[in-house]
Amino acid sequence: MKPVKIPRRVDEPPHLLLWSADELAPMLLGLTIGVIIGKALICFLGGLLVTNLYRRFRDNHPDGYLLHMLYWAGFIMTKAKSLKNPFVRRYLP
Image (cartoon, rainbow, N blue to C red):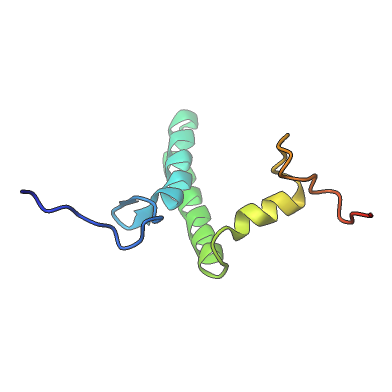
């Protein structure tokens, strides 16, 4: 029987080398855009900078803080009845 690797945390995203999947996305996006426009190194370094800023933000706030902030600012709007309009700040009876 082969041993099964059990992650320390169930909700932890997959890792590649030093970065998790959500940290790797800006670097790969910057590299892809850089290859298309012919400035791969500059765009990759920009993606690396965005990743470091995101990591610093994520480590100083609780889980889900960015999604709550985006909802409160009005960037996440759905037609679901369970999510009220984020622009309505006061509900009157």
